Length: 280
Image (tube, rainbow, N blue to C red; front, side):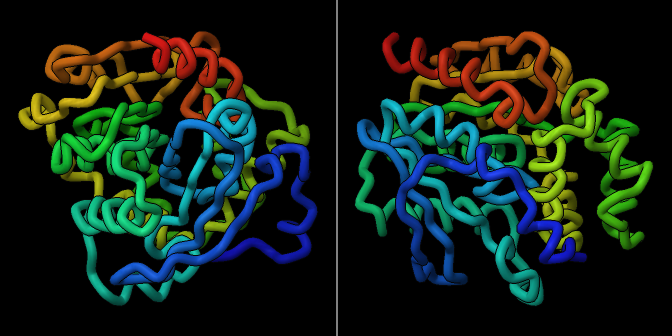
């Protein structure tokens, strides 16, 4: 299900990334939209379950002060009919590897947010020497079978949802980590999330429902920064423990007063942590 064009066009531009360039890269299985901004050492941002690269706008804007920031749309983001051809998380990892080949990036920093964090983890395990550093926020090594996750997965898969409903609004409040007033930030997040077709969201939920990569984390060789909002209801402290214990070179940082969408609500706090990590 797509939101109306008029509603999407009303998005607040102040949350968009700083001016850069965009284009398309023809990968083996789909054509990916690519965004670039800033200059400096390269960071590749991997977007989450919904909202695509546009939802990363606030973070990309902040990172672009010191880095050349790349972000790309995941498979099916711009074309839900791609779902007619089955693919899994390993295929999304290969999409990332192919994108790096196209960009001729030998050892960039890979930064994954939420669902994108899972792709980043799996990439770092499969290709341990193809990245300089790894950063993830809002992700863990195992899917948690919590009530919130089960409800979200079931509802997205079975029920068409209007963009403005009590359930949707409450779900967004959970993502924010607390009651969020209906301001420009709330409108930006909801508008961007509903750019992603509901069938694509449901498919991505199914891809992670069987996730369990705890026993493979020691394959990660790159220095790793794990960020987690202290109000993130989707990622529990228990699920983060394997990342902290099994990745050989890892740094863990809590993000105070942040929920799952910390990369949107508190991008400067994340960039501060990233800057310290890159200097260490």
